[in-house]
Amino acid sequence: MNAFRTEGFDQGISLQGPTSVSTSAPPQPVAVVIGSGFGGLAAAIRLSVMGYQVKVFEKLDAPGGRAYVHRQDGFTFDAGPTIITAPFLLEELWALCGKHFADDVKLVAMDPFYRVRFHDGTWFDYNGDAEHMRAEVARFDPDDLPGYERFLQDAERCKTLGFEGMGDMAFDKITDLIAAIPDFMRMGAWRSLYSLVAKHFRNEKLRIVMSFHPLLIGGNPFAVTCAYALINSLERTWGVHSAMGGTGSIVRGLVGLLEGRGVQVRCNAPVTEICIQNGRACGVKLQSGEVISSDIVVSNGDTAWTYKHLVAPEYRRVWSDRKIDNGQYSMGLFVWYFGTSRQYHDVPHHMMVLGPRYKGLLQDIFKRHHLAKDFSLYLHRPTATDPALAPQGCDTFYVLSPVPHLDSGTDWASQAEPYRAAIAQALHDSVLPGLQDCIVTSKVTTPQDFQDRLWSYKGAGFGLEPLLLQSAWFRPHNRSEDVPGLYVVGASTHPGAGVPGVLMSAKALETVVPHVHV
Image 1 (cartoon, rainbow, N blue to C red):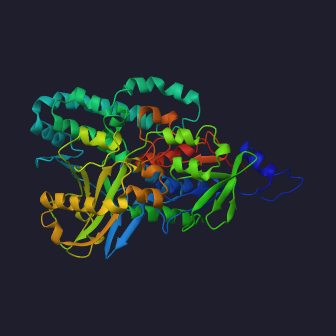
Image 2 (tube, helix red, strand yellow; image 1 turned 45 degrees about the vertical axis):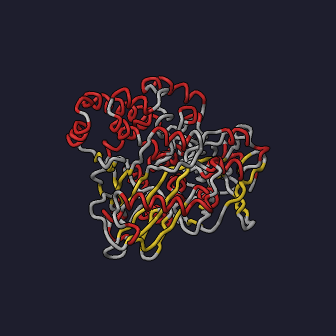
Image 3 (cartoon, one colour; image 1 turned 135 degrees about the vertical axis):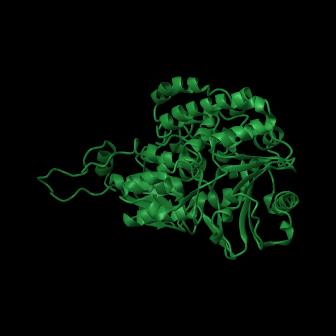
């Protein structure tokens, strides 16, 4: 790569030389994107529309990253995200390409959003209907209705200030943080989400229902900032949706947008090094030894892994090994995908199957890094909405158990099967009677797989835990603090995990990458 070209481009000047020398079009700047999760695909689309020649490299054999799709014995399993909120963020990507999202993907609104089933067999059906929600709250404790109304007001304030005000802000400079401090104060962001909920509700079951949401993005409700009450308002405002064909249909749609722009996703192509020349990122090296030159590099990989394993230590002034190692990381995920030879028509699309403990279990997972014998589960039955995801007369499931990341020292090679069997028995005894006799296909993913297959540091499911001092400016920046020309998107950078978060990280990217001048 020509050094003059790189320097001139980084300063935002035209790539075209004097017209007296050449009248040809300027060379198109090249952007390499590492990883094809939602964040990487969204970034690739936005960069392509900005005028970059985009090259996407994916470690796995198919696009999707954490949204990869497993197909086994006629069953289709979404590996990771299963719900869509704020669908306008996806519609925006299609519009940038002159297309309509609804022409490629059909979303179905969920009702309930989730069923939260307690250990004693009672449950709360959580949805977006205001009167239904008031009735559900009153069913558990009518005295908590005034507190519920106050909580909704707090959640709405957090959505307005946190999501709408800060979500696509890159927090690139300390002045960005200073400017945001008043809004953090208005949200009372120093409080934990659980403490905010407990201020409004006395009933312990209602406290659980209104505080579990951060677990969907890797956070402990007793530790994350109460700004994440915004998730409650986000869901009420835009609903909770599932895609027909599974979340993989959205991945296929995003890849289709890129193909329409001449951008290919190259699979089975792990990036093992970010090349740096004259102090700035200038391309990547693949596991095969092939080197691809570029003007900028965007990593959709786990940020801690990106810095620790893809960037040489001498270039890391901020994200040193010590800082990476000392971070507090999200929990790990144990996921069991299974298909049944019968259907469970009374099980909704999304269900939380809670164990006997709440705070104590979360302390075991996040603080003690101890694999407990009890568990709380997220049960996903997509065939409740789309029967085509399983053979006729069958059901597709996955059940997810939050577990400690790999600092627990758990030997998952020996523990995975006993843990799966315990979960199967618990489901058999509660919401899936007869399960043990009708399992026809099975697959397990552990935190060890997250580390080995997805290159997720410590096998954490969502990167750094979204604590106040690991959020916004304190989270790895969208524009690398260490390496000019390197940018990051996805769950482990700002604004954080969840489909809306990773899509907004790609939107924030537009404010910090060099603009293409022609």
